[in-house]
Length: 162
Image (cartoon, rainbow, N blue to C red; front, side):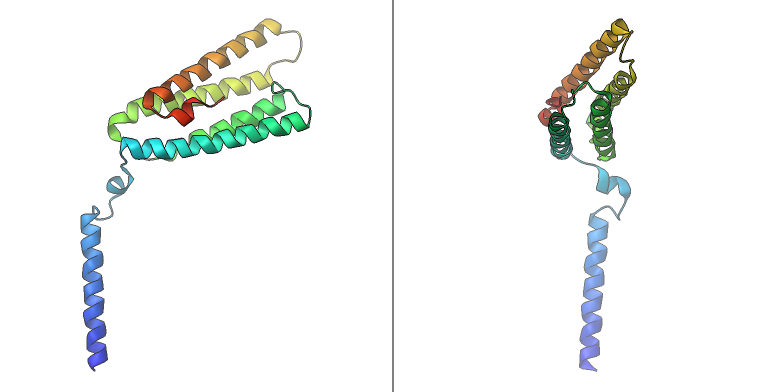
């Protein structure tokens, strides 16, 4: 009987501790758990971008092994897909409310850059040199904008992506 009483006391103490933890943590509310500071967001975004850089480097190495130009449609598509995956991961990160508009502008710029890269991959191989030059120039412009926005947010790892 003494053992059962001790179990009840321990169970009650544990339940009380868990309840207090939930109350202190915002009762498990989604917003309380998902809000991050700017520093936490920057650290998480930097990890995503470093992973993306590693994947892009791997794509470049594989292209070199296969003697493919980085301008080959297949290579461009792979790089754009990796960028899209990283952007999706970045969009899923909880954003600090004060920085949310700037972060959204940056993520939109990344999405635009990936879309323009896919346009370049679909550009005709022959006969439309002026159009292809225009898409190449636009890709350089939108990538530079995305880098500038990342650096403006202080996310250096994301501003260094090629």
